[in-house]
Image (cartoon, rainbow, N blue to C red; front, side, top):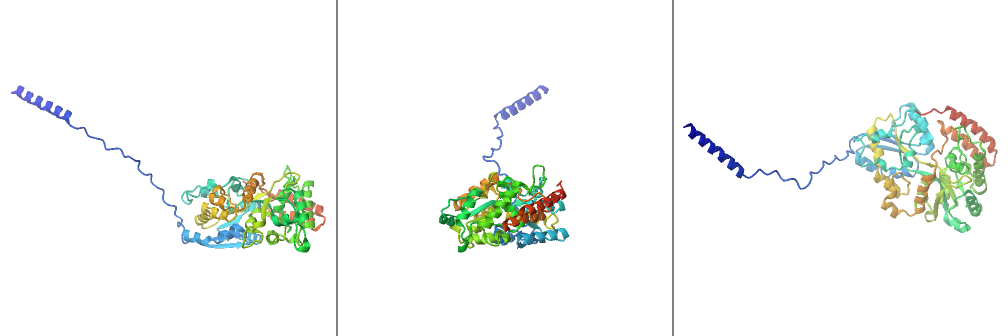
Length: 454
């Protein structure tokens, strides 16, 4: 009986093994033919601060006027209301500085210049660190592309301690704009690139009895110093010497002052010592001046048919070269955020919008020299640009220019006033050397009082 049971068990086990061997093996699930789609990042929330209000303080110039026409689009995009103010430069600086100093300002976003008030505003703690905002993914649009800004553009918004306190709205350089028709009429070749060529052209064009002047430029004291800095360096001079001491009474500096003063006296317009950019521009765009030395940003006005009578006659080159070569100043305004703003995120949204790729390209198409590589390299700009010499001159100026167009002091306005008085004396034909000695003493005292940034 036991043997019979064992035999049946053995047969049963053998059958199981055979059936198992004949069974069809289990198939693995087929591999997907394509990889699953990567999760898409959520769209940037431009309305994250809707309902808030911003106060934006701007200076009268082409870029701010361009943005003024577009502000309503920012309101639609974000739901943020904007009070957008534009004031003349001197009035703007006085008003914002007084408000910041009082500690009661409700300004959120404002234009600024490192070379003008950088040391003063940073020492007072009024600038927000822009790189901290750029590096915050919660409030920065991934499409903003910070790396698209030119190095030279970002350079105008950096302090000596390396802090980035704004983003450039445009770059400008010390330029000489000229009227080709008046040059042709006088039988003079263009563009004039040296002080000798400018003097010869001014002499040939100058016909005050007909209301035409050979040259116009800034002569209104402090307002003249920024543009004069290009000329100063072409003579091999600077605000300070190699040891950092004041040097506005050096032989080279005085040579530049003398040349500039003589050019105004002999071939300039009456009342030149009251001229800032507006007065020079008015004469130039109405065909009353052969040359105008000022900031390249104003070329947008020169070729604007709504303002200018010489749109098809205008040319532009860098400020003239002298004994030490051609070194135009490079500068520009940057958009900054007030450190004590109560609307940090909303303010940063405005900066991103105003200086995003789309807006910057629009500005570039309006002949504003922006700081984004993508704008300069865009096919739209290349096709629309009617002034190829403008782009070529701009790029060259970015290579050879000098960004220190103001004395490196805390009290920049005081320094400009003192040095501007020297230029006024030269234009008037007065004793500018004695004035330069006074200005040098003043500048040295301002240098000694300037704090070192941490």
